[in-house]
Image (tube, rainbow, N blue to C red):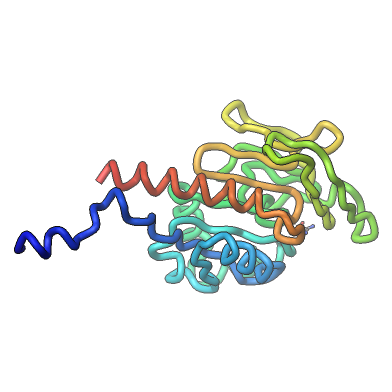
Length: 215
Ligand code: GLN
């Protein structure tokens, strides 16, 4: 390389970090609003409908919806086993039904799960659809009270020792983080507040840095 050319090459330190590619599981449920929020935060969202679409992702959001129906879709193409291996190593954020899929324990009624995040959840714990609620409360996130939209939400009844609770409702965790995993029992994509998604993007970026150092 000539000296003139070398001078034109920006140093790695000056280059903006490439956007994170974040998958949104799109088998069923409320996935569109996650795509909008991720794009607004500068990430590169990608809908995931088949196992192959997990390739190369920096993180994955599993949306709210109906976890039983999602499980039925996951039983096709060996998707369940592939997703279970994926969430063991790659940043994943489960919201509502997605949190139920991530939990190690699911009750009321019990059902199979990916069993990746050390929490126990009680499904539909706050009553039927009519009991869906919007709550605004202080959380561990800076920036003031957070709006939390609960729709036939599960309740987190137990958290393992490594699980950090970032928000609560009636003394039960509603937003948790543990290593590369996050879960919310509410729908952050339905509020015009990007802080929860930003937290997940920060987690995914830290994880990407760690992975590249290991290479
Ligand atoms: N009640 C649903 C379930 O058990 C979750 C509701 C939601 O995701 N909004 O899967």
